[in-house]
Amino acid sequence: MTQLSFFRLVLLSLLAVSSVQLTPLWAQQADKISVLLIDGQNNHNWKATTPLIQQVLEGCGRFDVDVATAPGPEESMDSFSPEFSKYDLIVSNYNGQLWSKSTQKAFEAFVAGGGGFVSVHAADNSFPKWEAYNRMIGLGGWGGRSEKDGPYVRWKEEQKRFTRDLSPGRGGTHGKRVPFLVIVRDSEHPITAGLPSTFMQAADELYGKLRGPAENMHVLATGFSAPATGGTGEHEPLLMTVQFGEGRVFHTTLGHDDNAMKGMAFQITLQRGAEWAAKGFVKQPAVSGTKLTSDVPAMRDPADVGPDEFTAIPDVTSKGWSTLFNGKDLSGWSQKNGTATYRIENGTIVGKTAQGSPNSFMCTTRDYGNFELTFEVNDDVGLNSGVQIRSLSKDDFNNGRVHGPQVEIESAPGESGYIYSEGTGRGWITKQQPVKDAYQNGEWNRFVVRANGDRIQTWVNGVAIADIVDTESSKKGFIGLQVHGIKRDAGPFEVRWRDIRVRELK
Image (cartoon, rainbow, N blue to C red; front, side):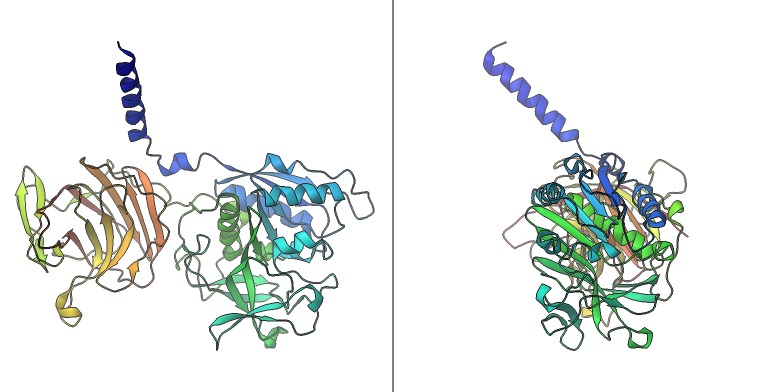
């Protein structure tokens, strides 16, 4: 074998390996995030809450947690020197004496160098004189904080924006412990993108009048501090992110005691915020409004926290699936919009573009609500296509134009598997699109879709692609096979579907 042939063989081998390394969700989650949870001093009952934080994090299957307990208030802090660098993420349930200078510097270096940090509830009361720590948490309370430490940051409903108030006043207050509504102010951030727009937290302290540098800080959610319960009358920050050097910080003011930590609002936002702080993304599943409710607080014992029951990809080889396409004709289907053609060839539905035609759709004649869907598709390179789910066509909406969620089909690198709102003007429903190469050009590709309530999940060739909460789209409608419109001087292109099956969910 010549040297050139040898290198060609090596290159082909590498390409072959790379073409099959499409990691399914369970394998993506096998690499757990290492966490150091710090406690030992706190004006709150840390001995009760630390085990609950550990249960919440470890229960979802994404984290391994060690606990570092600092010396007590009457003891020297010189011996407290955790090896921060051994971990992906530091979580603080600590509010007490200042750490030693060397430990402070080590912690600053860890976060600034790219480590993740999560501040839980009273951890933002800590260290009022430690400048770097206050920059990490963005806002803090008590400990003598005042206007000298930075502004109040509040959401002003009448202005639809956050304001910074430098007027004199103390830093830190709260009213009575009552349930309250968490209002998401940024629904596109990875932490909150998979959550309902509002949801209730269990009875908790709603911190108000927090002050701090508020540098590189982004508020994700607020709560209204009601005057009737001793609050400020302001929409106060509840969930925040801060960039500190190369590190990411998630700051939650939720979680006063064991009852507050039984609130699923605390649990789910802690899990998602912790993953983002450690990794910069969130692979955890979206959470629907039927689970994280807006009328009463959803509650769960932290000991019962476990991986989401709908995390796993549906088993397309199991029982209960019904065939939507008989392989012989288009019985049970009808065409809507456009002039693209659809024919049956060798047990497949073949859609062919028509020059100058708008988008065309071959649609099921019955509607589906909650379901799992699977199909195989082979799309010509250069043709954008998709499969509509829960879609509608009404005479009083754009003359019957098909509209609703579409599972994108597109050559790699591209957006295959992500969800687009066809015909509504909303654009992409999935704002985060990290995976671009799950689709295999020129091959048959297996798509799997689950639509359950307002949650939609997709997989392409076993790779988890989308997991979103979509509250705006219809919860019932037809399934449609799209042939995208093309320019007059392009094409023709074809897209082929086979093995189209559905399994309805209760």
